[in-house]
Amino acid sequence: MSNNCVLVCGEINDGILDERTLELVGAGKTLAVDLGVELSVVIMGDKAGEPADEVGFFGVDNVYKIEHPLLGSFDPDLWTHALGDLCRQLNPKIVIMLHASTWMDVGPRLAFKLGEVLTTDCVHLEIDQTDGLLMRTKPVFGGSALAVFKYDVPTQIVTVRRNVVKPAERETVKGKIIDFAAEVDPSMTKVQSVKRVKEETLALDKANVIVAGGNGIGGPEGFKDLEDLANALKKSFDEVMVGCSRPVVDAGWMPPRYQIGLSGAMVQPDLYIAVGISGAIQHLVGMARSRKIVAVNTDANCSIFTVADYGVVDDYKKVVPALKTRWEDLCRERD
Amino acid sequence: MKGIKILVCAKQIPDPEAPLGSIKIDSDGRKIDASSLRQVVNPYDENAMEAALRIKDRHGGEITVLSMGHNPDVSVMRKALAVGADKLILIKEPILENVDSNSAAYVLSAACKKTGPYDLVLTGRQAGDWDSGHTGIVLGQMLGAATINLARKVTVEDGHVIVEKSIPGGYEEVRAALPALVTVSNEVGGLRYPSMKMILQSRRRPVDTRSLEDIQASPEKIRAMQIMHVVPPPDLARQCEFIDGESPEEKGHNLAMILKREFG
Ligand SMILES: Cc1cc2nc3c(=O)[nH]c(=O)nc-3n(C[C@H](O)[C@H](O)[C@H](O)COP(=O)(O)OP(=O)(O)OC[C@H]3O[C@@H](n4cnc5c(N)ncnc54)[C@H](O)[C@@H]3O)c2cc1C
Ligand SMILES: Nc1ncnc2c1ncn2[C@@H]1O[C@H](COP(=O)(O)O)[C@@H](O)[C@H]1O
Image (cartoon, rainbow over the protein chains, first blue to last red):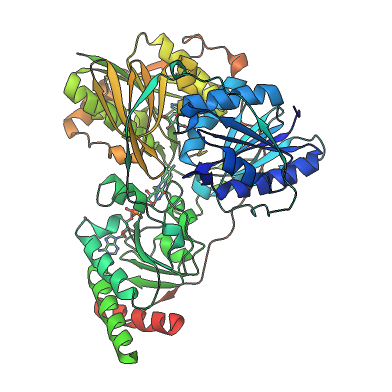
């Protein structure tokens, strides 16, 4: 087995290779070249054959396929166990995972198991040419600064943010597929799954327009105004969605999947309308790359206006319905 | 089951909601300067306290809040006592400034063991200063406890903890025998407000301040975060055009016109 490789943790989604894996492969490729080591990917699941074959075409040297019935649905203890065994064999120089809830559950366990230091939510990875160690760049204080961490340790473990690395491209030659036997059994986890509940998913990152409400909306009823505006905008845009800031989720006015920001969805629609949102850094990092930003807020001094293209300083309860009515009128005039 | 013993780990951090630009980078680009910000309890740790209080409301028991740092501010952390925690323990030592998450987990694990038997350890999912998001899980591993991440809801029943944990596309209900460690997310709900009476009472309550020696943690196992340098984030600022109008309605109408021009 190859030693001291860069190891990328692949993800299976509904039986097929999750496309986000390719971003990690892209990041891993650069590092493997710089270190002069092999690039390997690990794919774990109850049926990992197809995704393993697929990822093999993206310029990787080896794909370690770990197939086991117990690895089909996410269990952080079992996943960590299988991955830890593989790492003990491979002694990877770097292990790269997605910054997603599943890997944020596995990463710390793996780091503990291997006695290593994890850095989460990296946005840039680079080898320090002077010592061959990994420089791990990560936003801190919500995104108020970027810190570059470096640890002199044998195995570097990181999770990488979505959409910060160019995905690897498909090639014609395929890497080696290597079966790795996982020795996992149910006694390896102290946590029992009772049930899994699927919720409606919301692809906020696919929206053309997002009408987002914050604490200033004042209650669940206020979101009716935002939905009315969103419906009016649907006359002109393909995908119009409603979103929200975190206090809205805390208060239970909207379900968690609507949250935008550091711990929610990261979006960049053509138009983002922020209503009753103050503009805390943790919200801004999730939406400030939108093409045009409109903010409606009663407080002229709040931070949201510093990232907005257009601002309205007034009560949303009056502004938003007026915006909606006039938009409908303008659409009608043109018809 | 009566009388659950809960430990809540809560970190004191510079206010994560401070206005943009209040966090500065030192001129040599090595340190972050947040000294102008007021200190608060990390928001997710307030969610963890609320989860603990709800369990205590139902089953009775005792809540101990643990916080460590190089210079924790008692007046900030006393909030834990004001909302209903029974004990507050501060672990204070100069070398605890900006330690890496493994070291933080190590010190907290020593403190947990030292406080005696416990049923449940709760942490926040992430601290809003370094946004590491993994101290809780590492702590769970060190304690050898069942470890459950990202709780939306935490309840206790017949010696087990029952958690709704967020997973991609929904949530999973999981169950583990106590003792267990759970990291708590904001969906649990905000921390209750303390009454005036409780605030006043909490000021007279003792706070237990301990050194590393007191909790039998060895300083050799504690490492600082290794930061090479710190750089400012990409500039997010834009020039904002404020929409005029005699009334809010007129501003709304004018905004519609501008957007129509912009997006056809
Ligand atoms: C680790 C961490 C992660 C976080 N992750 C996220 C995240 O992913 N997403 C997120 O959003 N937050 C996140 N936060 C929370 C963040 O710090 C802020 O608390 C949050 O973004 C504030 O939300 P808000 O702007 O809706 O509320 P507030 O700050 O309370 O602002 C409400 C605004 O509404 C305005 N307003 C009031 N009434 C009206 C009215 N009638 N008309 C118009 N305007 C009105 C007020 O002037 C005010 O500006 C995170 C925090 C931490 C510490
Ligand atoms: N210094 C500390 N004192 C008490 N609890 C802490 C400390 N550091 C981290 N924690 C706990 O660990 C959680 C995750 O922190 P972090 O991994 O730093 O994002 C926090 O929400 C706290 O519950």
